[in-house]
Length: 178
Image (cartoon, rainbow, N blue to C red; front, side, top):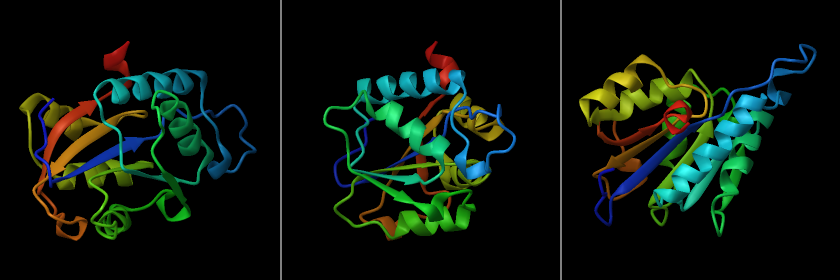
């Protein structure tokens, strides 16, 4: 993993883990995690904590599967970072996600968004301008459930984050941690 110099911005885009489809009567917003998703969220939390990727702030979709993914992942962090749940992250298009990122205070150096596809994948690919070729190809192909993208930006403030301005520092997928 590349180091990000002090003063730069880091963005973690964390897609919720595999959701459960066992109750078709549940509204989409209320779907939880499949057993595979529970295990993936725990593994991802341990990996993020082991890499020292503790966010200064986490913004999480209000959907149950996103909240549960975050809850399980944060068990690996001590202390856990502050979390704000935002309904506006639920199935948000990339333009809304980017607007949310750009509105964060300068005091937040490392920000995590926990959300959904297709918005997360589209935002991830549009923000990423450079990085290791193999990881760029993996990201372009798919942003799987439970995956987390770590981007670094040469920006003094979040409102300076631009399309193509991110450097891919890590693309962590649950299947790579088994």
